Picture 1 (cartoon, rainbow, N blue to C red):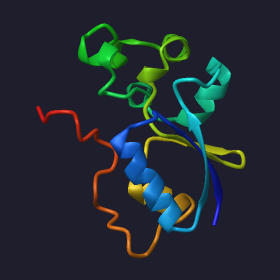
Picture 2 (cartoon, rainbow, N blue to C red):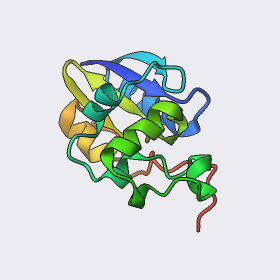
Picture 3 (tube, one colour):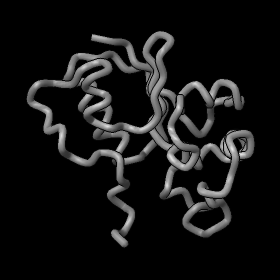
Amino acid sequence: MATVDFYEKPGCIGNAKQKKLLQAAGHVLRVHNLLAEPWTPERLKAFFGDRPIADWFNPAAPPIKAGEVNPQQVDAETALSLMVQQPILIRRPLMQVGDRCMSGFDMLLVDAWIGLSPHSDLSQDVQTCPRTPAS
C-alpha cells in the first residue's frame, strides 16, 4: 500500500476511474486539483522523466484540439512554460509516491510501480477521455 499524491482535473471521468483502481488496490490517495496547483517548470518536469515531450500533453485539451498548441513542435522549456500558464494542457493524472513521479495512467506501469488489485483488467483504457469522440 502506498500513499499517492494524485493530481486530477475535478469532475474528470477518467480520473475518477483511476482513483477507484488505486483505492481498490489499498492505496491511500491525497487528491489535488491539478488546475489550481501552483506549478513551476522544475516541479512539473519531475513527472515526465525521459518521456517524449509530446507525451507530456493532454491530447484532449481545448488549446490542442483547436490547433493553438502543437505538442510535436515545442521544446521542453516552451512546453513547461505553456503548462504552467495553462494547466489544462498537462497529461493527467500526475501521481507522486515519495520521490517518484509519473504522468498519465498506463495500467501496466502503475501496476509495476505501486501495484493494482489482482482483479484489475490491465488491458482496459483508463487514459483516453470517454467524452472525446473517436477520430
